[in-house]
Length: 314
Image (cartoon, rainbow, N blue to C red; front, top):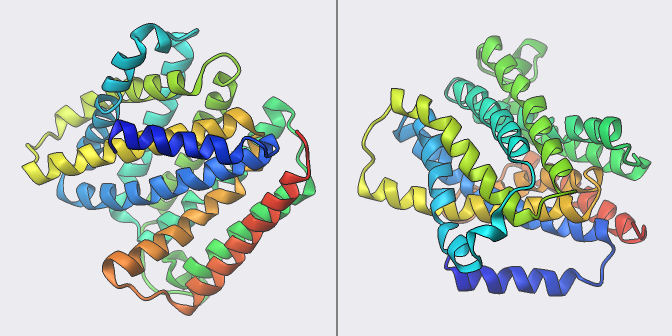
């Protein structure tokens, strides 16, 4: 994304949301981040099938760092000086560990299973926010999160490999890889909560830059062990991944900077809706009836909690 276009888009979101309560602003920023991450995930999955997943992980964050260089030079390196470098590498270490676990399981688990397990993340995040930050866990947030997860399960349950044992699906699958994928969810949640803590003393731009730098550095050893020279088209795709990833992480960081963590979790389920829309537009994949019903539940839950949050002046 060209720097000028990204600046205009960011300014437009700021201008249109400035009059809203903080939690409502956070919901909007999280919805926008979900669009970027949906596009990113589609690209990354394709690249991970062509190259080693650990190399794909490294190159995605390397280009995420490189696309930020013009921004860093424009504002000056001092604008990105961290208050606590150790916290950034703690966050980067947690996120890298989660990525290693996620990428290890990814080739061995059906996509539907991956989707379902990934959406357990908001539950871990909300529990952590209540435990560490003493955020108010209003019933609306729990209900919206529960409805969002229910909507996801409506979509993916018929395709889950483990549901075959209960008469609800087909396929085999390895329970070990499912456990590894599930174990990555609380690790990503911990990374998310560290980011929330950082917003108390770091700017969103500093968090974004140091996240990309730390994960790039920590991902390099595993990438070198599995290195294969990418083609020109793959290099271009990683450049686009860098742009999408940096934009998505900026919006996500802005969301938890202005709002309670718990208020921003239910919109994450909308990523399943965006993914279904992308598959229909780009690949002609007609959504199944279960996808339409689940998407309606997720969208309704997100709209409802957004309106509820707009009434709370927090």
